[in-house]
Image (cartoon, rainbow, N blue to C red):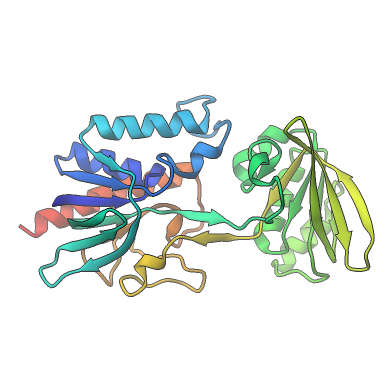
Length: 305
């Protein structure tokens, strides 16, 4: 049995593992896919303090190595169920058997909704992004597009318009879910165009780089839009199904925690990173959450003695 089980091997989980291990706790990180999490898919990371420009893969590998050097154990295992037993111990049902922990930090993040188009996955980091705040600076003075009709899409369009030569916001309906004040601001911005009742039907690429979009309108009109970047702002999907019954989730599936990252409904359970309810989801905020969760989990264990 380990003191703290960290579920999720992204920046939040690896930071939690690092801090908990340095506090003298036994820690196991369970990750079902790729150590380092979604950040490993970023060709370049330029907004993490102190690192300058580094590849996401390199940063993820470095975080994992540092956590392991502190004493954390990393296991490529899928946690399929979490049960808190009457003894107060957590049982983790995995594809590799049962494991036990005195406390759990859940840090499985949230996946962006995709367009589901052929070639989309291959173009991530080569023209396609799901985070304008993260990647907008790579497209300075270039033409880009944003897909979406909610407030996040309009926020992205406004942010990108300050850096890019032109922004086309594409939405499949004629009305928007975004706040009206954001819609008004977009309409007033001279280098933003709105395309409604329109969908992206195909991604155009050359030598592995996005160069344009094929668009289809509701009336059947096809056109080609040359762009260097496409920012998909269709929302995110938190990976929190295993927390049903253990934690309060909002209508989108995000976890409610207190400021100590504790899940009030289940003492000993903590959540960190993009899976929890929060206003900003960035690499730096994930690391911050992981730190707080680890300190809180260690405090919880001390209180159980």
